[in-house]
Amino acid sequence: MRFFTIYINGFVLAAINITSILAGFAVYSIWEPSNQMGVQVPVAAALSIAAFVIWCVLVEKLRWQYVYLKGKADLFLVYLASLAFSPIVFVPLHYVAKGYVTSFGNITGMWTFQVPVNILVILLAARVQGFYTRNRQRKLP
Image 1 (cartoon, one colour):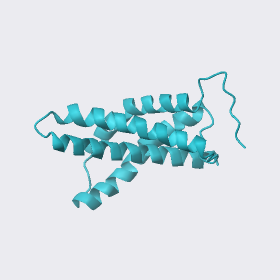
Image 2 (spheres, one colour):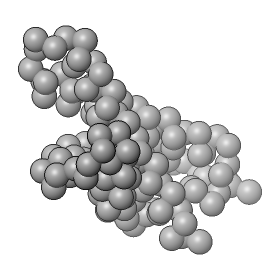
Image 3 (cartoon, one colour):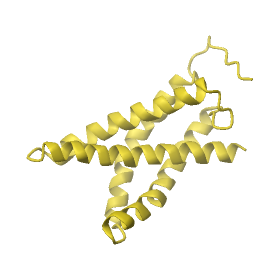
Image 4 (cartoon, one colour):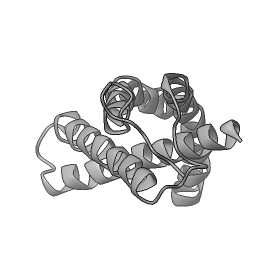
C-alpha cells in the first residue's frame, strides 16, 4: 500500500512539474522578446510549489488516507519517484504533440528544473502536513 502512495504522489508531482513548465512557456510566449529562462523558470517553480502544496492540503482535508504521506521517508521517495515519472510522462506527451521522440537534452533540462524546485516542494509539503510541527497531533480515522 505504501508503494501506491509513493507512486501516486510522485506521479502527481511530475505531472504538476510538466504542466507548470508548459504554463511557464505560455507566459514566456506572451512576453517573447524577454529571456525565456528568466520568465519560464520562476513561473514554473511558483506554480509547481503552489500546486503540490494545494494537493497536500486537499489530501489532508479530504482524508484520502491511501494517498497521505506518513513520514520523511515517504517525502524522499516521492521526490525520487517524481524524477522517475517525468520522462515516463513527458516522452509520450512530446511524441503526441510534436510527432517525434524528445531529445535526452529536454529530459535533463527538466531534471535540472526538478531537482532544486522539488526539494522546495517536498520541504513545504512536509511543513503543510505537519512533519516539522511538534505540537500538532494528527488524527486520521
